[in-house]
Length: 123
Image 1 (cartoon, rainbow, N blue to C red):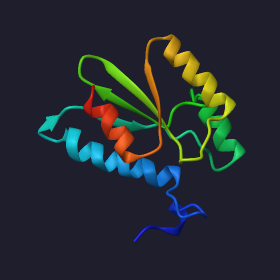
Image 2 (tube, one colour):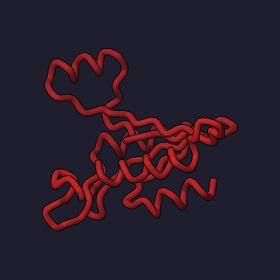
Image 3 (cartoon, one colour):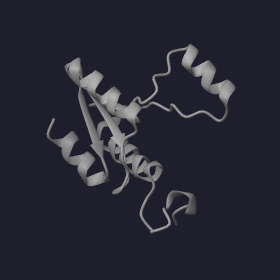
């Protein structure tokens, strides 16, 4: 049964729930102990209060950073921003996307587990 905090008012999944689905699928298919084919790393950049946010910024938190990165063989790094079907990037997220793409990294906005699977399986 889904936690009601993971469901929008219109019945769709929240970004958190979508990311959980992606994480579970990835670790069960790519990060098995005896056969690691990739690493999924979340980048939590939210803070519970201003003091915590200041501490995180002082240690390198980047506002707008993608929600998570996937590390694949041969130095391939993919960055993912999770959005609901109607979700939009903030200005900070748009700026981060431009910066990392300018450095040659792959950046994706994903709205479903199937969309994420397709990207991973074609790399």
